[in-house]
Image 1: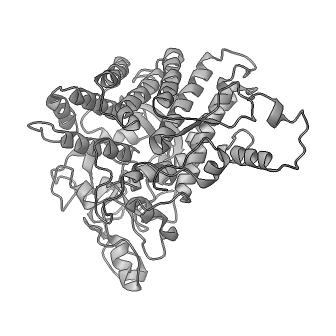
Image 2: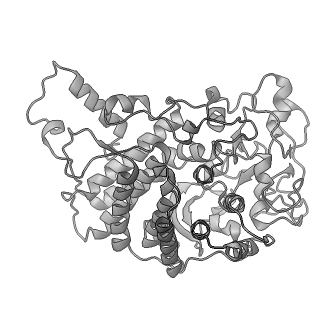
Length: 528
């Protein structure tokens, strides 16, 4: 697409240009003589940035989601017969055995860099518009650039960057450490100044674009993880930035959803928690974990029966670990499997949150697995006992193994797939503030218990660092935060089910080989 400049394509072009000594280039060639061009219609280009984030590997079950969720103790994608093998791709992510050729790494790197490139074009002083003020649009572009650069810093620790007035012939410089952080903060400060204030009670459509609250959320997240990026210890000044940013979000009216409304946050309707959402297809958050025979309106092929959570993660939640039916005494965030006598057109027999035990159809009839494995009851187990297919004898186990986990329900908008994915919400901001206060020496037990009470969980006598990590897991599962959280709490490299302890180099990803070759300012990360 003409509007999207892929960083990979650009850098490969540079390699071709400078390595072909017999190539004749006219003095007027735009690659050599022109500055880094602005855009003729800023509004259209800002919309394009939103579309990049809401499409492809930045919004699907691949790429950004897989690298930050499947690589943790939240998800494993077992090879189920002929399904989900994909040349070992999914198990490589879970086991931390990836290399620089993994497609999820390549595509995620490319798309995040395309956001920074396109956002910089919008920010360029040469960018114009047919009419209207450009202040808000350029502030939105700065937010999008800060968002993409933060992910690149988080996942690779090296951020390709070109100034807005640099010529196209200039190979992007690479920002690392404090320099990268300062660049991101500069963008966010301008974004916070120039973006509109959208309160929790404003219309849902306004929250699909960057706002002051969204920029403050990203500012808090950056400073909460800053010590990880610098290889230092948490600094009180950074923790105070987190607290101040969350206080600003609270001043805009954002708050915890009322008891009983947790899963409503993930519906395409307005709520007091959602700060920023994208018009992305929620299907990739639903179909990968649902079984083929579960009710999947608008997805006639059924679920994809891939993603499942690990027993140890499921057991972080309060309630009987062996059953999760309605009325079993579980906390709200764990969800439920509907009692067969209570299924209706709303829950379709599926339920919410964590699906374990016997599953049912929309009429309350117990489901079975597919015919190729025989009349095996569709009973999701707590443990994932096997991850790789070796013979037909594995079919039944691989088809039903594992508790299924999701937050977005398929029965919305009359059964149509929903174009609504929550990027930032107040529950995350609330826990970031609690963690910052904890790291500054404050007892946050009362604050955590306020959240737990709202979510239907019992109070804790005290709160430790391990309790904070567990609470973030219970609150933020499947919301692309787990890898970051585990790294910050020093738990990402440990062993868990179907994964051995991994090397420290695995906390960050390898840079795609083609990009290292194309840009001499990039240095491959250690261990790759």
